[in-house]
Length: 181
Ligand code: CTP
Ligand code: MG
Image (cartoon, rainbow, N blue to C red; front, side):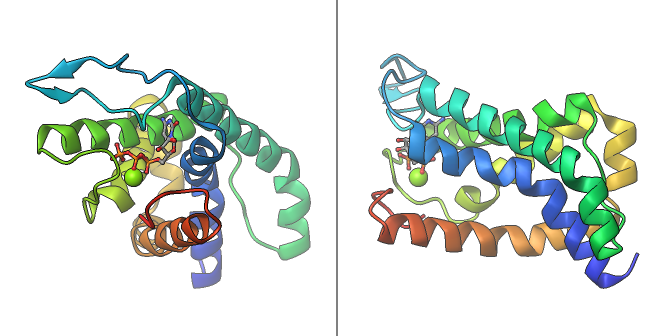
């Protein structure tokens, strides 16, 4: 794989995992998933993790994966790049894993005394990535190992924090998010 192809495959493949958290910010709100319940005097997840955000985020990622599958042949022909298509389980595992990873991060933030919206550098940028990759590796192992070569994984780890920081700063400046992380 050329460098251009590696970067293209990395971004293409992770798009269904990048979109869910942004869709959750735009469309989330309402009933918190933990229903206000606490564990050792701190909320289990907090008011920032809602059913509507989790569902809308997952559905947005699924919809994007289906669109990418539909356009992959045409984009591949136009650019000369060998772009992967998502098997059905990956269509769900990438966005759902991203949402679950973000929830796990909030769980850890609450356990370490951080209130809603507090920054946890590193975790805030990589939680959804680890969740998406882990759930995909567990559920579609063959496709995962064939698609996520070492070069693709390295590109994802380098590019993701940059993309995440940029989109969050944009969402913050646009007044969609109360903190820039
Ligand atoms: N959101 C949601 N449901 C989710 C994830 C996010 O409704 N499953 C919405 C919430 O309105 C949340 C906003 O997106 O406040 C920003 O998401 P995030 O930064 O992940 O949450 P925080 O409010 O910062 O809370 P935490 O400290 O738990 O990360
Ligand atoms: Mg936050």
